[in-house]
Length: 175
Image (cartoon, rainbow, N blue to C red; front, side, top):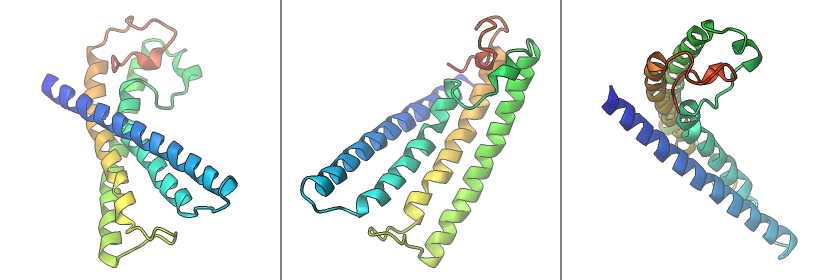
């Protein structure tokens, strides 16, 4: 299991690095677009479309790393009051995350396959084959599917009192 955990964490780190590059590219593109629009007076319409695709990349590539750091949405108000039951809630949540990841991967792959089959192209200025940006959905789903069991195993290994009562959603030992 340690080898699996190391591989998945490596993939999550690669994903977050690529997400950071996507975010930086988005920043540069938007700055370029603002400069072109307001300084040169030559707007670039294609930047909005590309920035949208890059933001999807940021989200889908960072999802596994966010899970490992306990940064997914949690209802802290409720989980703080659960005490020992918080671990069961966490484990149930990780099962739900795994199921969501599987669904994203399967349905995303179907979406990519369909887009390629019919030759779907974006309506924007770039006319991108839609399967290219859509490929980010099954990739993110796969990363999430792989990260959830590793996080689940970490939650089982972690002692209840390790993180203190302030953050029961971080009982997982994921970090």
